[in-house]
Length: 94
Image (cartoon, rainbow, N blue to C red; front, side, top):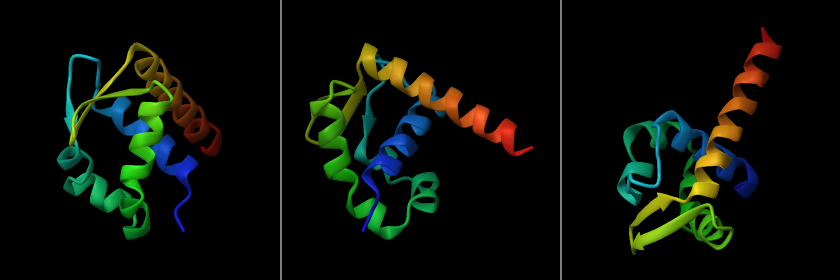
């Protein structure tokens, strides 16, 4: 079973890594790209739709079409916070 909190954090880190903003629309195809396919195991990829729906419900993403999403201002902040937390974690490990 996939850990939705981990998948949510991984997606937020992905948004920050690709410098996603509210002006940029990301499609499900982007999430299923080679990078994401290597990052997420099959169970996590199967849970992607549920996690995307939760991010929309939480006001992190806005759904532009059935397969396209954009970050909201709240989502941009959340992505930046997730990236900063990841960077701190990496520094502590060194």
